[in-house]
Image (cartoon, rainbow, N blue to C red; front, side, top):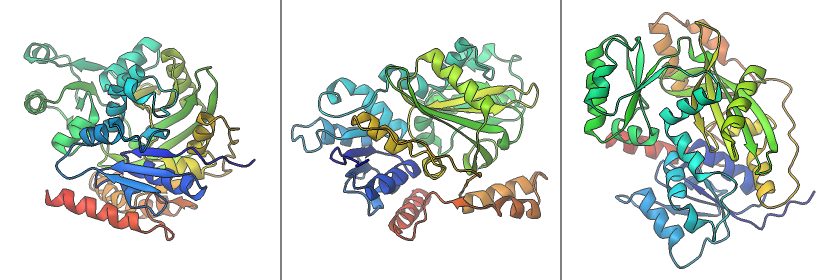
Length: 390
């Protein structure tokens, strides 16, 4: 099959996901343009056909409005893939104006907004008959007072929209071990910064109980692929991003994911994450994303070129077949994983020997490093340095 590469792609935001897509599709001859802030790794890739950097002091939303809603039409006809929550918010808010000029795919704007709302996502899971952790809405002082005596510690103060919380606090959530006074203080600190939050129970068990299901559903209801993976470690433990992933088919995760997406009528790309509760053995919904995730390079290397599959589907070309790897693949963030090991060792949960054995895996996928495309490493370092100095 000869691939028609005439339709260009524009990536909005993202880090690992955008870099993987730019490298993969760029090598195939597909024009890939990138727009994002200094932490957007794909901006530094030699496989990016063009780059549009968000200027310092300007929000990505405002910059993308000028770039994509203006009258010059320089990017008309691109497939637009939003790769961050902030980018999804932009596309969802301006979908009516974008649809006539760009290819947005089959994602439902209202559905994507529901998935961005982490509390709404858990309610959708309940409505679908898919297990979810217990949660409580805290919109004001009255609702905060009502949950006193109801919550079972430990709990998390979790943002309704993650990207707003991360911008305000530099972390994904707050973990409250046992103090209701601390819970109240954390909720109020979020309110003070204008960030909506809710309280959710922590699903007990190590991070290795986390697993994810990926799929893409066409408007006709056909699934282009089904893929599952799991997490070995995160840093910070129980609250941070994964620092070691593992591929492998998990029938329970796939079944629960299909039931959720069937119930909500998913259109387009979907990823759902679960954690198996050690109390009852059930998979509990953690979150849902309607975009490519940080593990995109692992997914592709495992024989699921989902970026190319979706590209071909959107451009009316035959969709490539998946060729699953016969053995597990691992995706590893060395620095973050070492910090995760140190935290687990302090907790008495992982020895140095155990950690060494866990990383002596082959083959290993790295999300950033590439001998043929080295500049993103320096771009990521610049972003980290700027964040530390801010």
